[in-house]
Figure 1 (cartoon, rainbow, N blue to C red):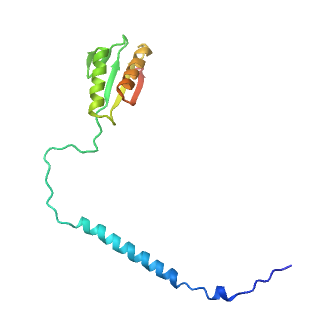
Figure 2 (figure 1 turned 60 degrees about the vertical axis):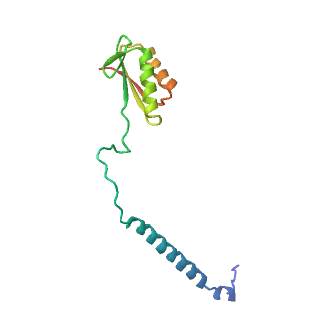
Figure 3 (figure 1 turned 60 degrees about the horizontal axis):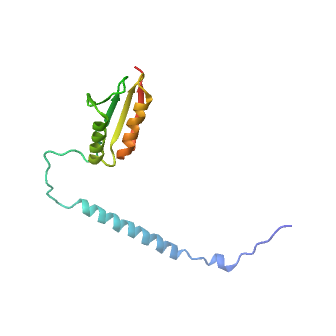
Length: 137
């Protein structure tokens, strides 16, 4: 059984004039707003020059803690006691509270407990960005 659909006068009298009005209003809005953004770039300003500055996106230096086979801690090539390591980590965290990273490198013959101690020191001072590796070379 086939269904017959009658054309009514409502479909034939559908007006698209309001739709065209909305499209033109949107077009005008985007043209005006893009013009304002260009005007801000065209301002003639005498900006100060900087002679010595570091880029603001520069990442802080990684702090490397080396642990030798006897379980001694070395930072910047020098032997450090556990208290000194904690002080250095606190200072680094204070200087770079959000972006400080620490690399903990242990000798392959070192006791894993020393690496765990360095990890716990990092967590104690609030440094969450750290990596720990055992060097087998």
